[in-house]
Image 1: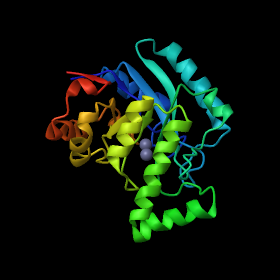
Image 2 (image 1 turned 90 degrees about the vertical axis):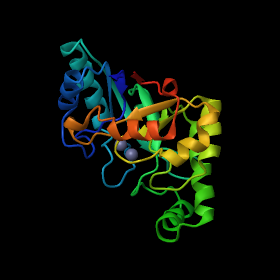
Image 3 (image 1 turned 60 degrees about the vertical axis):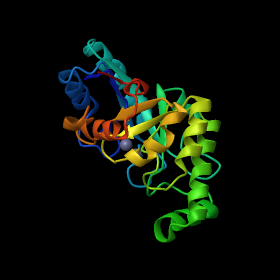
Image 4 (image 1 turned 180 degrees about the vertical axis):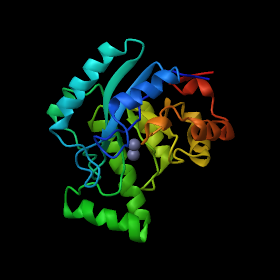
Length: 237
Ligand SMILES: [Zn+2]
Ligand SMILES: [Zn+2]
């Protein structure tokens, strides 16, 4: 299997263990053609990037692209879906600097209102059906209102109606991630949506350099769900 790209890797700019260059070196050693650095959005209360670092990361990546011409290094961001209106932690300053935006649900993202704060409790303590509807609405609105390249680990941290999410993802051209670290999408989800013909991406979600390009778990999920491999954009078998 050839890995064309790993768009989902973290560094010390959020809570990864390695530097951008460490991730790049591992990607080169694994023959990966494109690597994306996608640290957590700034409204993640525990691990978010500092806004002042975004330009620093851009400059660092521009220099590394000159130093390592054998690989294409991109700056992305893994934004947080913050509420049911689909707000994510992005602003003009960030969109002007990053190459792509991913978004997903995370614990410890900063609520935008009392209502979105209560939804955290609904999700984590009570796990109501109402919360599942609200979560689904949030992802759908996030895809409609922002230019999102990939939804990361759909269904992880917050339960969603995956068929509804997949239909809108197909309409707006957003990819769904099969995450190599958290088992989402999982076999059951893929079996429910594979007729919709979405585009899929595998992401390692590496938090350590040595995990860059670690697609083993995702490949197991793909095989067990009998997903047509040609729908997965970033590998070639
Ligand atoms: Zn994530
Ligand atoms: Zn991640």
